[in-house]
Image (cartoon, rainbow, N blue to C red; front, side):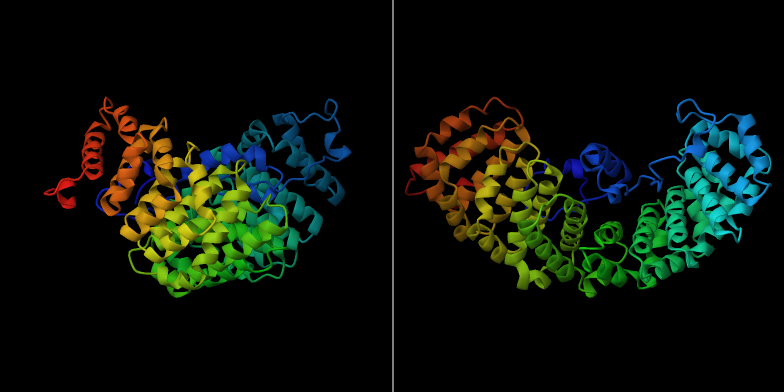
Length: 514
């Protein structure tokens, strides 16, 4: 498995190969930081490894009493103690105190003060288990604020609440169920809690039940909590086997593909869940047997048709994980590409739509689509032929001058050229010497290295390409790279091959040039 960072740096000698898009926590954090500003309007993006807050945007006046113009400053230890004392009074006073406490718990200082006061968590959990709905909801909001903390001590203080959080997932209040799910999802980031609390307490069966809820908010919350679990260090050994053994993968496929107009957030969450499961490679044979490839392929085709009829903004949140799922399933050693044959051309057209629609704002989607193209064309001459016949091919050539996409574009083109004379002839007719000359002028040495490999394949399988290349001053273009230590050996070999093909001798068989 190649890491994302090494994707375009490896040579193609020895045949084309499929590459898997891995999904480390570090990569996901970096990606989220880069895209968060542009996509903040979609609340459902607050996912992946990040904790998530369900918080009201506005504070009521009674919460801000005693503050300076309603500013959100930390609550002092004395005030926290006073709020705890008020929590033993009448219902109205308790609710008001919990609201004030909830506001204060948005600050790290107040969180630490609260958990260190004797009996504080015991009191909060007691109010959380109250039979008064308003009181219970306010206490749940306080627990939710604590679960969002980055302080391990604060998170550990929430341990006694996990069994109650799981219990209330079976309650009748949709709002409380949703809040408990996101609180559990936040806690699931912590490995210690996953191992010691949530798994033994049966979080997987409870989440399976929430997935069957008729309420989209509960389904989405279940997807978030599950996606957090699936990213823990223990996921491959302890969690994913339980998930697959419970039959949840089929339910995930159903939720990813159903009611996208109303349930886009649900689809996004469970698409990422599938992605984490597939990346683990615990039992991808099961997913293939469940027809995940054609199902998700058809979804991409449907999403592409949606892009062409409506604004594309927001769809990238679903397109990204679904494209990754299909790409990584295609990277499996066992043959599974045949399941996509019936929709191969439609899928390639869908990729074209995504590339055209998401440039330049969402370049990361274009990169994912190029990974998919690589894995589709790696071992399939028929798909390579289809690629050459579609409008997608000119779009690929245009992407060559995009620094973050050029290496992947060249990888796909090498896949095509490796299929033999017919494909090289078509590639030469479509692109021709101007393409190679332009590619040799790229500023990135790694990209130029791939251009040299592509040229070698073209000259090997279709000698006329070498003749045209020399006729368009191609040798001079190669000479400019002769002083580059990284490229020198390949440059000199290609100059020799192109020169001999352009002026062949009687006793110089093609094999001798290679």
